[in-house]
Length: 135
Image 1 (spheres, rainbow, N blue to C red):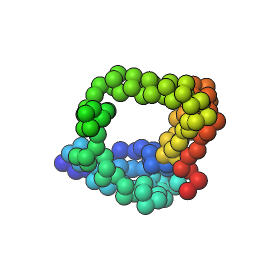
Image 2 (tube, rainbow, N blue to C red):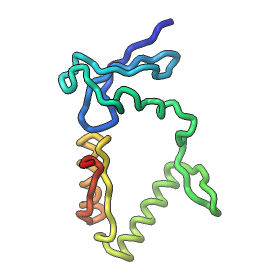
Image 3 (cartoon, rainbow, N blue to C red):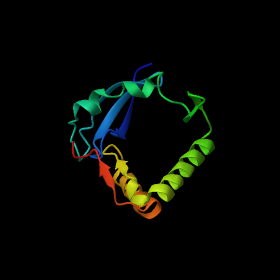
């Protein structure tokens, strides 16, 4: 059986380049730019073309981890999110909202970054927002 081709949008940055991903046995084996994509017209950066091995890495996390008794242990999403909410509330109460900051990501969509800044301003109460898209 040959490779199956799947059209997709690159998730590495926010540009939105069109890619054609070749998949064999449910694994990515090759990526190339989609010539029909208006954003990149078949061109792609080195990351879009070659940075996909992480998808199949055995080192990827499969559940949230919390440190308990000095050791990282898998926990449920409910426990992890409750821990985060408690800590953020404590920091906000003890040190004030301007003691916190949020770091957004150029690899995320504009919509995700919009929600990130909205969370920082509306929930945390801080305008301290930065991102990696200027590098």
